[in-house]
Amino acid sequence: MPEGAARAYLRDLPDAELHLLDGGHWLLETHLEEVVALVRDFLDRVHVQQPAP
Image 1 (spheres, rainbow, N blue to C red):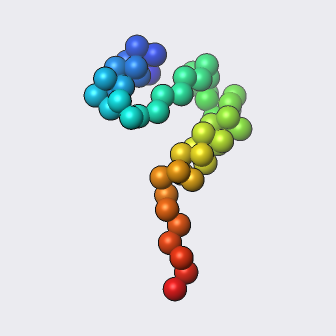
Image 2 (image 1 turned 90 degrees about the vertical axis):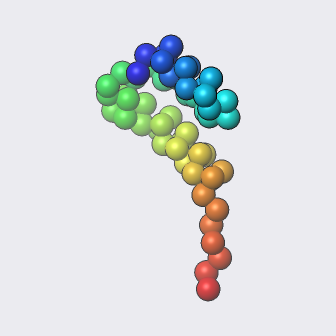
């Protein structure tokens, strides 16, 4: 999505994260390591591990 449209989400979701990467439609092919790092960081912060029974 264009940057302006992405930034519009921040008006409605001020706590949202916005990461702008110059990758176009082939983002995972060109920026895989960067995307994986961002996703892992997000999941580490929002997904609480439950202890094993």
